[in-house]
Length: 488
Image (cartoon, rainbow, N blue to C red; front, side, top):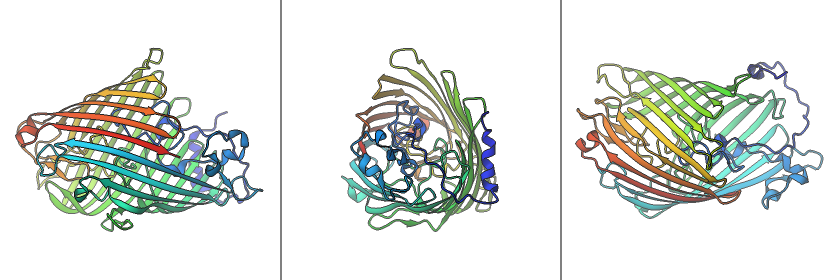
């Protein structure tokens, strides 16, 4: 009989931890499309049904299966599994890395209201990671990163320009049963990336050269596919020409659980996230913010249908104002699996509250925290706050290695008393009475996986401005991006 996923939570109540080594699992791991290293690219598309074997969080990859010689099929396998103890297959060193070249060209990136809204540059990201498994329980992971911007370097943001940085460096220790099935509890201390759920609130921010990172403590309870995470961290602070530090103005903590539902191709996430920011900035002013987020996510498949729905409520204080903000994000699609090119019709609908009460009422602006890059599309024009949108798309797979996507996104302001924010929280357009309509986009993207290690992507977005943008002095936006990634 299948063990109920809910029993995974006993991992937090284990009275004693088994110190004996468990039998090695040398099966080749399967990578879910949502965990693929490409899953944050081409934001308007569903995860590619044929992902490469590399994951968005590189530390989630495991290579102990290469202890069995029959599983070694790739040129890089000799450095993915370097045995350290002939008597322990779980004692090994694994090396990996990535080289990405990304070209971006944008016209009126900030709706044409700023002095530097036309951009054209090349981004280069080079990473190298070392994963040392002392045994089944003790592990050390480190990842160095170099991010460079060529072109308009004097205007390069810190997230794109740092010749040498420590992106990740942490130590893991596993209590309980250290195998894939668990139950086990992993304690992690150091600097690490995090990505939960669909990345709507916590993600890696894959598009810029330097992804998000956090310094602190993380606990991970697991049994089979069920997980519970608890963390207390400070977000990283990017610097252009020396090692990144911590953002001392911010503290971030939370608990996130995810589990499959028995007897159904469905999953549920439930979470609480807390953020204290001593320098929070909104159109209504600047103050210390203490914000609590409570949310749930329902996702899965029913036949050819797929769905991913996530409501979130936020409360707390912004200065002397109480916070009450919310969002509902949905992504629903149907795949015509028997038709040529496997067309998928997708439809996203999102609402994120804005500040509508004025300086004396509750503060209603939604804070998307550390959300994924390209939340609405690859142009990354708008932050998901004070916005509502309807986003239909068509995804095609003419051959296994190629995925093409066409989409359009209709965007409105939630509140006319609040404005539009850029991805970093900067104010793009100020409040204005009248139309709520921001505009609509035309989007096209093509992704080609030229083998296990190489992926090529091209993406174009055009935004046709609506009444609000025109009244605020803005104009049409054009974005073209193309990038090639080599991963090993």
